[in-house]
Picture 1 (cartoon, rainbow, N blue to C red):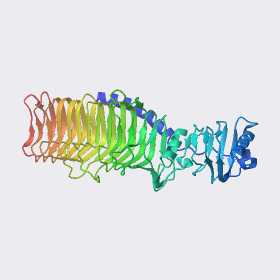
Picture 2: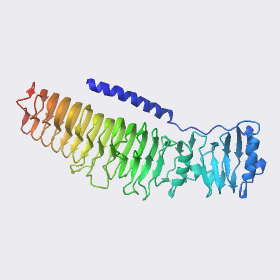
Picture 3: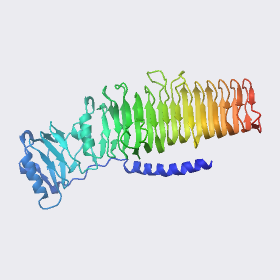
Picture 4: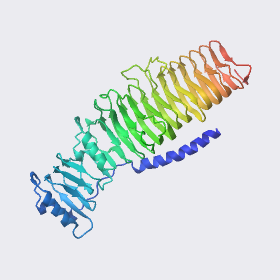
Length: 496
């Protein structure tokens, strides 16, 4: 277990960094406290707020009055609609406070670099341009006109919010926000404001990628993504075509009825690096739920569910697919296909040409192919405390080197429970039952198998045609052709 400890020590350090980042940004910040005694009321300087009168000159007078004696100042908009017929700027030294029912009708250009203080209400309307980078830590897409009625396309309101604020707090609306495509850039934090009531985003027929992550240090949290209207749409897309992407966080997200829930661009030289996915629930998809390629530096997938039991399509694809990766850690995963699935390509978790792949406390069931298919992987491959059941082919199929398991439980698979090719493998405390062929088939070399209980399998409990293998404490009954069949070039230490 020397390699495992080294793997875990590095992963723990990386995970701690991501966890700290997650906690630091977990709760949306409230608006800056407003002291009315020090604010300048724009109506005191001639603003009318009737939606017809041009209030630009009056607002400019209020700004000058608020800042003439101090480096910073506050202006206050009482309830009303303030028409801006000409361009206006809110500079960084200014705090702009909106009363309930106050909003600006923008006809030309509004440049916002000030601090915005407002509630959950529409602040900006009109056909003018709204630009700038606000001084706030967070912004609300409702300020820019997002309705969240499940019908109106709210894409523009969200784009304006993303362009102006680094952190986007999305208030809960039961009907949800209709969105075509959004790009998250510049290390954005994009989240539902209430972790208990996930903000719902609804894809359209035009959606290719509901959320595209194109830069490092991006966090996406507390969302439900409804993808059913998009025929080939992806819920969250890592666009690493231009550059690598690192230190991203996906947390507390439901992705329903997607063609792909999460995937990357599969760029040969740019990679997704050190990214954490926690609390993902991908349900009833129409193609591979999570597909990530060319990763490096640990990708974490933890406390997550992939459940295709209600999918509308035949499952002819792996539920999770990864290749050409260096560093994947999956913990507390539940992956469930569809009862009666029979296609051999429908593997639960498939990875190839990878190193450092580790699973702990994972459950895979109801797939037509293999539960785990680890193909041409190099070193540091681990399955710890994992259950596999009801697979059309193998429960676990390994073709590679340096593979270890502890406390693996496999049952009800159409062919072998565990199928081994390659070498340098160690299996401890393994239970295999009710599989159509052998409990364990070894065509590998340098295998150490300790404590195997294998019962009611169609052929042998253990079938070995490899070399230089050692088998200790093999037990079980009810296997069709007997308990063991071991190569002369291997050593059976004890069997009951």
